[in-house]
Image (cartoon, rainbow, N blue to C red; front, top):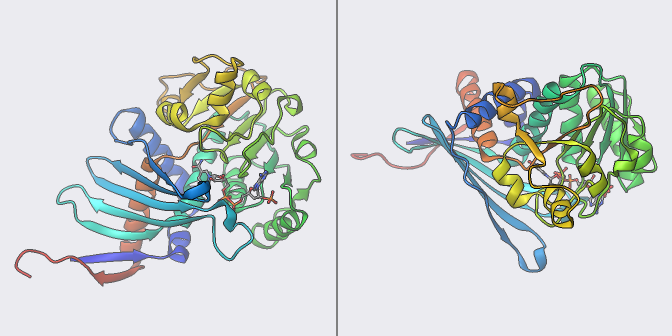
Length: 331
Ligand code: NDP
């Protein structure tokens, strides 16, 4: 029995942003219809919370997958990505492991692709003044996703490190042919913007309600634990809140749970899951003035759908490295 090993460069080649956005839309609808299982992820911390090992399983009638990934925030500035691991794809008939894939690239692309789907769904049609907070892996993939979601008029970026900002501007010019302005403060990046992506590893708010303009759409991606957040309570209180999944937000979202504990928002604050809006069973943006938030926690069904797409493409293009793995009866 063979296992197909698909490395990071192959994942990039096999899953362009536009295809991934389509796959994410399908996966979120499937979840909304109750056709996928997405148990809460299991999170295990290293001493002093230096890093975390996450296990994220997802199942449908067709396939199963588990992403096993480490998150090491201290890796920023080292040769290593802050997220590393593998996605294992299984068939749902015999339970055979079919493929092992690089999870760093899958996470980078699928997270931004879901924000791209949210932006297509919730941002104003004329939105195109983008601010990105953060200059790391997600900041890069989010620029690619925003370019797919809306024609961009202007792009500003901020993170704390001046060198990181300059490297980002250079990368956007070299790789995407996009002019990005680096700003000295988060406020300068977001003032007047109508699209904002927060992609930082910050524990305390980097985006304040006082800086937001009516009609803005925000994708908040960086905070995915109950004790960290990127938006302040004032911002959360003034916006319309959409999530990938309620159960994940109730368990993992500091952006939601901290203002809830402070009494700044109520427990009916979440308007809908993206899948519900995609299926038409819940409303999306209701007026041009609403500020909409997609609060991303990241779901295993997104990794499963990515793995299925990558596996299909790898087979059709003959990519990946096949290794002999398990044995079948009689072998
Ligand atoms: P990177 O390590 O590549 O980038 C982290 C970014 O955050 C850098 O731009 C860094 O820039 C900035 N940063 C770090 N610490 C702080 C701080 N205390 N305050 C403000 N900015 C800070 O990580 P990724 O891009 O891979 O991930 C970014 C975040 O997104 C992480 O928190 C990660 O856990 C989360 N994530 C969420 C996913 C989801 O599905 N929702 C999926 C994957 C990641 P500088 O040092 O210049 O400020």
